[in-house]
Length: 77
Image (cartoon, rainbow, N blue to C red; front, side):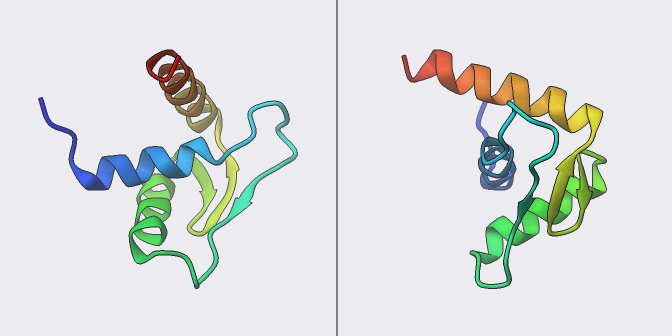
């Protein structure tokens, strides 16, 4: 199984969220790589984040980010 670059970009965005608080979101600025802006928009369309340019994680997004960050922690240990 291969992972498409679009999915890698979405994972990169999810890894930017601080899971220690629900009061902290992110903003993907217009200067960001086009791939990250597109990934952020796709996460919004999937219902994982609250804004097209970042915002906060939804409940589903928080769960996805937890799993993503946990998997990365296991794979990099």
